[in-house]
Length: 317
Image 1: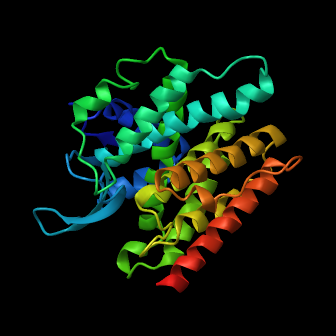
Image 2: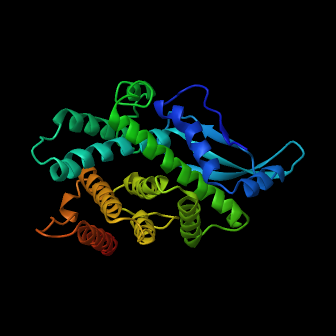
Image 3: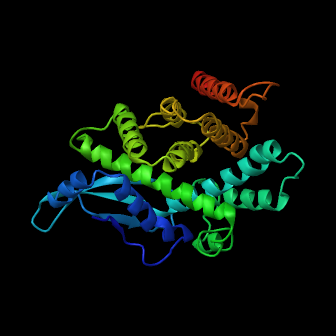
């Protein structure tokens, strides 16, 4: 039983990957349970894609509808502007990590590829224009002129971004599906519902993954939650929990990763924090790394610094 995305025209280049995400969702799902939900008529098996040239206002949602006979059903909906932003962030973070964190350790004699770093900066800044209300909305064709999954499919960084994005979107689909399964749709939403959907989505994907897939699932979840940092410069979630708190709660669940994968997770988290601070001119919030500090310890210091920043902003208001 497949969830099909209606994405026959590629409004954004990322749309070419939506079918891959829906297949991964099916792969990680309890097939019998998912089939029952589809056959019950209360959950649509079609993923709704909303194509828009507007600023990002939402990422995904499980939306209630009524059919012609006034029967209630739910449908998971995603917005393609958010998907394009998320893919672009995946690409930028992977390039920055590869050139600035991994290469200096694995190949210290190699110089950073400045051309790739410049490209990743352009991809990131263009994607942020999808969010930032102060900047002009970019035309979708601009994303076809930058590294993208349609015309740069042989680029190793694009390939890695594709895998990471598909894992991210799969987590998002599971998160929305868990809202449906946990009965959140029949009650007023609260912040604890978001944590519950995060946890159950993570464990569903992680428990059903192969040893090779277990490497990518945590990365996708960290990237997805980190993508929520950039909605504005406050690091506050509004009706949802603060995104840094959501990230912290799930990264604590990843204790059984091998040491190298765990370090990569923390490195990815640090990179997301630093990009957020860079974009919103909050570089002074992020502490300098001290000699002989482990990646995990530095990640915790960065998180604590962001918490202190949020507290200071609240006091100021």
